[in-house]
Length: 271
Length: 261
Image (cartoon, rainbow over all chains, first blue to last red):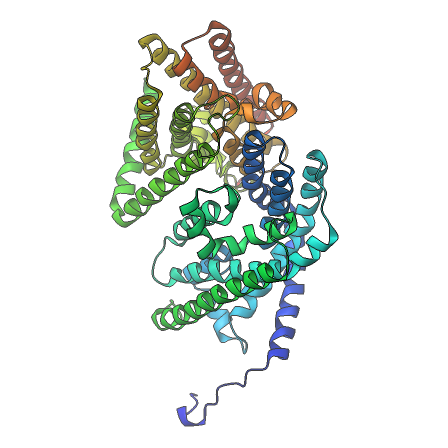
């Protein structure tokens, strides 16, 4: 039986209920992922490699500068804690048609995607923190609690920004089978201009100016720079938060538009 | 000769299948170019701050990046498509049974029968980067240096294959152990001159897990000419890696009991 269009009411937006659903899903996913520790370990290794290579390269260029090691240890931690894999956890559902299951549930599809994202990040954080600690001890870095606390809001927005970016790219799965290549391209941009290949301050002037405008620095480099003490004081922090918020708005809007266009296009055998 | 014909037939079939999907071809070409530009941009950024990175000049580093691209493309094209799926499909799902029944060496079928020809795009780009690096270097390598460089590349390729087989062989004893991702990650360390790494790691990368043979040794051989003290250990190392791989594979096969019967 189909419901007459006139009697259909769009469900009211209830943030508290949404948060509860995300929290439940996250708990479920954390338990599900707990059995795949070996796979999670490979993800951690892949995530820490870029910052480690960057640290070795720039430590060879500036052996006496303590900023390099501090920045890269912070970056290593930020990278591990903000990794996003929606090209696997979301796009693959479009390819194999299992997103239909999510579409039939009385909840927004994004709930499951966010839950999985937070669960994976939780496990990567648990496994990545010892690596960061060991690297920090090996390179003799020292962090201040004030810098770590100041970095928290920037980190939260950076993690959100990273999720929005990868999720937006993953939505292209509605149109192409090459979503992994597209996300790979996004990853390359992120490494180049986000602060992995080089801290933004080491980039040539013109590239640095571009990097400060584009969103990638807000995902990785900015939180690491706050922890390393390169960005400090209320005004630069507020500017950074504003710049991250603008890009989150841009990517979320783009994701909503892509989702609406994509779901109209989506067809699946058996639907 | 028979193996070469088999190898050529497998490669031809893969190339035919790949060329059917032209959009994918364009995608991979564009991505390879972007990836390469990112590597070159890294070199450019580093050398905008310094003239020498652990004793390596900018032109030398370009040659190193090009050489790394060459071996990476060969690894991606011929080794990874076979060995990365081996622990799961070959052992856990029992696909190895099919190979055991075929009239060709099992090790060849399991490690070299499939290929991804699109990855060879990187090979061409790598050659272009080497040419660019050499033109900046200001001095062309001698024919002997080029021959020695090719020899070290072959040695590097054999070590890569041998280590890939050794890691895959672990699945005979521990089927759930899949180390190819770690190998792929460690491989990225060869992208930079091994001289930048601190001493314990550098020693590991030279003697235990010889990634220095991937790009650093071939590049120094091409630029500074062949040295017996470098060439001989490289060739011996390659021979040892191959013998170990073959020995381990045979030992593993004796242990294998099949998963499909």
